[in-house]
Length: 133
Image (spheres, rainbow, N blue to C red):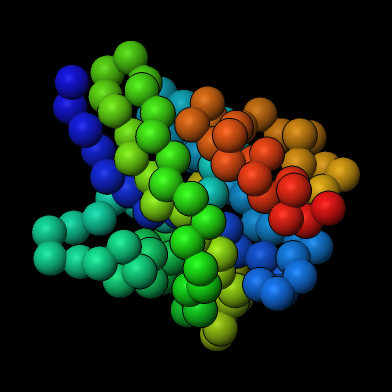
């Protein structure tokens, strides 16, 4: 099975005490309309943090501060294995401009399940919920 290594930014209002997190709905592909955290593939020679900075600039036209790694999600989709390094992040400069996603929302602990998450993100949501509670 093919393995894909990606990074995800859990962009929040405050990395020390997050009350809101930023999520996006995919604007393309098999999972169009499902919700996820912005990020993408790690390119050869990049660290996960470097990939995250690049991906957020490309997807959201924003500079972020990358915080601690929350977890690495390992998930088997039917066609590939996903390995996703997930980091806390905060907006450093710029506005969050949707360049690829079809929609975005700031979610609170009470609204985390108001969107339909991609399967790989569900375990991560539980970890985030505990941190936000």
